[in-house]
Every structure is written in structure tokens, then in C-alpha cells.
Image 1: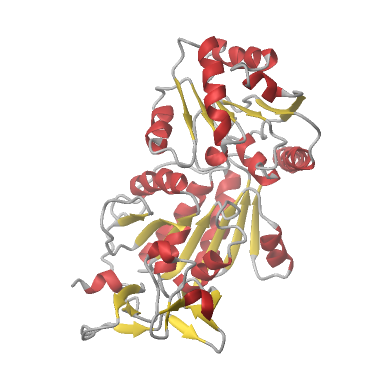
Image 2 (image 1 turned 60 degrees about the horizontal axis):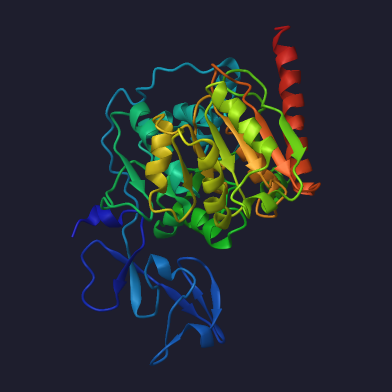
Length: 443
């Protein structure tokens, strides 16, 4: 066995045999009078629902990561920080804007002091690049760093950028579809579910897209975050749309906060245009789309602008695909959703310019960047779209310096509080951004 596989981790093993030298065992289940508590995900379950034969128990909540039960134990080796540091640590040669530099320095100071902090930056502000200085300093201190996101897509986009920025540092990638075996590395990029396997591992942990499903309001993942940190570890939360929980923590001064209301290229967020589109589903029954929708999509393509068309449900994809193929027969496109086995391949093809557009569910609301695109949402008033999701969706447009003012249109069947909230939030951030631009013009 390789001891490094257990550094800062809790690995399930059967409760039989001799424990290898240097390995600690940790409990898996705490048994109460009427309930049991899982030591991995912290869920409390009635004994009747968790019972196994012969007075043994298991946790049904995190079983997809391997069954935690009283028949098993965790193998653990305390994190030794055994890293060889190769120079130069930071191989990224890019340049931050003055605003990015200011936020980067604050983040770096917070990571050095192992603070719990929030970076609230608009979509497309360059949050990844603003982490680099803090990560580089942590690597030089010999610390172990975790960078986690709720979405696989975000991890897959972050990983090559970090590999390029820290070319001399070993970086591991962990997610549920990963085919490569785990290896011990100074920097680990992973989905937030993978944090459930770590224990007192990270000196500094960065949670990207902290407001995204399934991390937001998920008690097990919040518990995993705390457990994966060392007792004096620091945590940096990154988001463009902080939820009520984070904002309460800021108000209670448990989190320090940095703001960046402008994108890296200094432009405001594209305005959201809301248009009424009554009974658009009636068109789908005839494998058609409303003429106004078709005309708008044609405008994008005639202007040589690729686009994303978001729709509420997977069940809508087939009808919309048929309707669009009738009109755009010569165009290259695909549909994509969360359970699509070719999802990652299709996203990569869009990145590579092989598609003129993608028709997608909310799975691409964040963590993917396609330059100079337009963004359309058909049925933006559907309950499946939260206000924060709509802000993130709108933020897919205008990310390129060459075209910072992409078109964003939400088609709705009726007025929606969530749509209004999204519009208000974008307007609020743009107001703050414009004020900042005006202040900078006098500096």
C-alpha cells in the first residue's frame, strides 16, 4: 500500500485484519439511542432506516461514495505536507487590471492569515486569475491547497488553466467520472462531493461557484468543507451571486468580503432584455418555434455570432431540436443536458468552434466560457430557473474583450419575480460598476 493515498483523507476499509503501520483508524458511525450519525456526511438517520442484520448499521445518504457502516472503518494518515517545491511556482505571464490586482492582494493576505473570506465578483471578472497570487504564496509556504466546485464542468475548465499557471507544481483532478487513479498532490482540483473523502487535509481551501447546485444549502457538503480543512485552515468562497447564508456570515463579520463589480475588460454586464412570448409551448407541439424566436436566432447567425439557447426541461429538447433543424438545416449544433453521456465532448466541441450554437438546459449556467456569444432563454419564467441561475446564464455573454456587449434575451410566458430579481441584480451590479468606472476616470 502507498501511505500517501491516506494523507489527509478518510478511506473506507473493512473492519477486519491488522491496521498497517503508520495508519490511524477513525470511526464511521456514531450510534445513539434511536438514531445513528454518519461521520462522513454528518446525516442523522433513525435506526430503523439504517439497520443491517446483527445490530449493524449503515448510512443511506452518502452510499454512492461507498457504504459507510459499522462493518467498516476509516483509514487515515495526518497530513504531513510532504511536497517538493519547484521554481518558478507561478508560470502565468498574464497581467491583472488595477481592480483585479487590488482584489488579488486582499485574497492573498487572507489566505496567508488563513481567514474565511468571500470574493464577490461579477461573472467574467477573472476570479480564477485573481486566485493565482494567493495560491502561489501558499505553495511556497509548503501548504496543501484544495480548489473545489459543485460542477464537474467548472473543474474541467479550471484544471488546464491551473496546470498552465503552475506548470512546475503537481495538480490532481478528482470527480465522479474520473478514470485516472487518485494521487497525492500539493494542489487538488475536485468537485465538492469529493471533499467528503478528505479530513483535515487543506491549509487553504477555495470553493468556486459556491452558490451553485448541489453545494448551496447542502448540509453534507458544508460539513465536508469544514472537515476537509485543517483546524486553522483558511477558506475562500468565490461567487457572482452570493446567497442569504453567505451574506449573513458577512453581516456577522464571520467572513471578510472583497467586491469586484466590473469584468476583467472593464465593461459592464450585458443588459437583460425581457420579452413576452405567450404560449410558446403550443408551437413545440407542431415541432415549431415562435417566429420572433427564429428571427432573433437568425440575427445572431447572420452577424456570425454563436449562441447558447437555454430551455427549462430535458423533455423540451427533442421538439426544439426538430424545430430548429427545419430552419437551420446547414448549421452545426447539438443539444446537451446533465445526463447526456456526450455532454463533456459537446461542450468541448463548442469551445473548439465546431458548433454554431448549443441548445441546453441550465447545466451550462456557469463554469463554461465561450467567447463572443449571445445568450437566449426560452421560458425564463419557469420555476426551474432561480434568480441566481438566470444571472449566471446572462453572464455567459459579453465575456470577450473583442465583444463585451453580447445580446441577452429572456422570453417569458408571464411576469416572474425571479426574472425581475435577476434583472435588478444585473442592474445593481452595473450601477456599482459604472460608479467605480467614474471614480477611476478621475484618478
